[in-house]
Image (cartoon, rainbow, N blue to C red; front, side):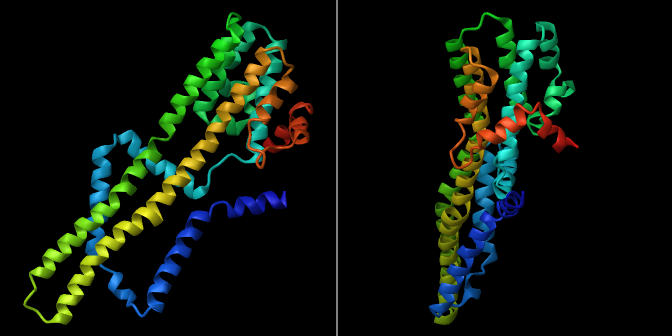
Length: 304
């Protein structure tokens, strides 16, 4: 448990730590070369670049995507990927749902599927239940199974199509951020050109004043490239990593249900799902068995 808490405590700081390292090395190296760090502080250049980037971002994306970008950035900063406990919780839910499907009547299963928030089997898995999209995905395919005439290959094709659709929607935020990052160097040139225009208006001034104005203009080019490759680009990549890892839950459900439909026992079926988890994040089979063969004692203790 101590190790788990330690990992949980450090998994939230990677982006901030990376940005701090980048800024310290960049500004420290510039100062060590004899540069004046204060020259880089040109707030109106940053207003031009960031404001233009924000404006083009709003123009290019619907409001739903704009809101989702904000949500995805929060997820990236929190490194909101599934923990081993959450993966075990999902596998345990699938196990108990399969067992219920074998033991209960169709009417009883329909009551669970229609109102998962009120079903005891879902209450044991609060993290899964809090994910409305994943809960709906699970219930929809259990509903198809209890109909009795679904073919495994048809269900697999349908699952693949839905998972791809979900992935496309979830990665819209990533593509929106990438588009902004790609445009920032050009917007930096725009800011630099405007700075040069301002400098040309002072062509009759002393070389010291003119040099300061030109240096200020060139900060725009620097800022556009820096924000693109050192800030927005890495954050976009982190968003993609986090969301791809969260989408593995759908693959776990898919592999488990297909194995169950092909005749596997619930305990064997969820082993198919467990194998869909990356090796370095995969919970051990003993942990899964403790949460399933123990009759849900692990989840009950967590709830208490």
